[in-house]
Image (cartoon, rainbow, N blue to C red; front, side, top):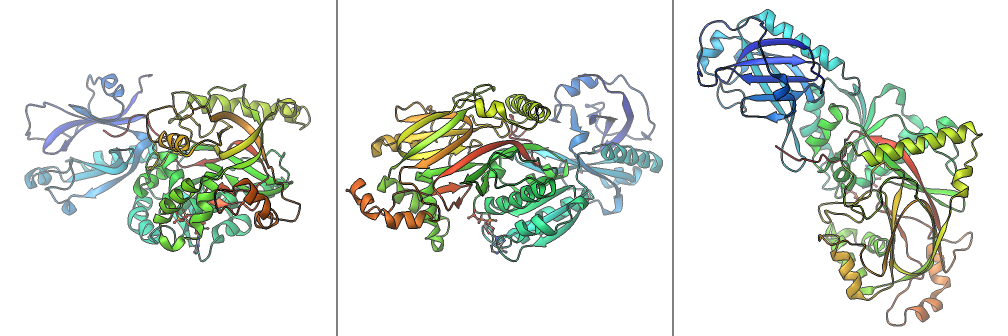
Length: 562
Ligand SMILES: Nc1ncnc2c1ncn2[C@@H]1O[C@H](COP(=O)(O)OP(=O)(O)OP(=O)(O)O)[C@@H](O)[C@H]1O
């Protein structure tokens, strides 16, 4: 890394010891001087030049090392002048232990708040207070750090916040007020807050009313359902403003400019888990404050040229559709309903007939059986994202006709399926740490279709258990996996134009009993589970829109914690 010129170097008191503190454009570092000679007397406030080995610190980049500590400027949250009178001189955090005498000798202090990494991708707001005897020196430092922070142009200044007060354990408002507000205030972020009054309040507000030009981002406080609402509102609004017809399955959608932050407060926070690595409100708030950006692919789902829904994680027909449909009827059971419906659905062992056709994504990097996973700064996402944007540019130069796309080969698979899953991300969650497709990418413009053909209960159980074990979950004869850009599903028992799934069930009741003689099955078609919501139609056409939205996240960091 190129050596950065120092902006300031000074000595300050910290924990009753002298530290040399250095600021450059990229890092704030502090290093104990005379490690053996702990207590000092006399003035130490002169700015001076020393033979400081910055490279030694840079290669460690973050966190505490034996003699020095280094924080990237991009992860400094704020800097404040500190009233020494207000400092409790003992036990105020790991950097604040100062004797009363030292505080009297060095009465000018400033505090730097920064991101501190803890276990399992958790972030905390750490702080360090430097003491000196010169008020001007303090002012110079505070000013210099503030200037560097003002150069971090990716940071949001004004946010629109939607809080679902009924999501999860109904703690959304409390979580926001107790864990997030003070961090936003510290980082000088102003907010307009809307506590939703009904389902789809946030979606409708974003679609039509919200003055989006005023904001640098949107925050949703809730679970995956609330996030889905927010992105539906934002994507629809962007398309309407750009004159794009969402009902046309082949339209290229316009990317959304505003980033979305998720403060997890739901019963399922899978998107947060997949894009940050943990569902923790403070961690999410800090990712918003430092202005992280993680692109995310979005699938559009259509039925007969009518737009149904967007999906960012799982589209599941058969097993996962049936679990959701059953669990919706048992909301009174609380989160236990997912276990109950899961076991019930597994035991009922329904299969569904139909045809899946898809366009394999052959010209890109990566495949679903890779050992490497999508992580922060993912090269596969960058490379493939670039490829897609070049294709779009070429098509628009050639007159907007997506010839290449139509020419691409379609593959067709007919059969009886226990499950058809399309995973646009790994779908990892605390229950299934590897997820449905461990090597799926957040932003490579594809989705992984996993076809689970009719097999014995025991084999299906083997497949399910592999979501949690080390074994390759696709290495089974009844499983196929394909990385695709588009796919269609046509159930064997087709829905007529004006009927929905329920009507089809009634109509084909006699057929059903013939096909499933051993059980009391009442369904000929399953339901699509679209990111936790049931779709009204079984026949669908799905297209992936590469990097359509952006989150205040950075993907899962490779090395967690310090
Ligand atoms: N004020 C409100 N009253 C009722 N429902 C709301 C309100 N605001 C949002 N919703 C809806 O509540 C649903 C669930 O919200 P959320 O995702 O925050 O919590 P959850 O407990 O994780 O839910 P889920 O079971 O969907 O995962 C969302 O689909 C959202 O549309």
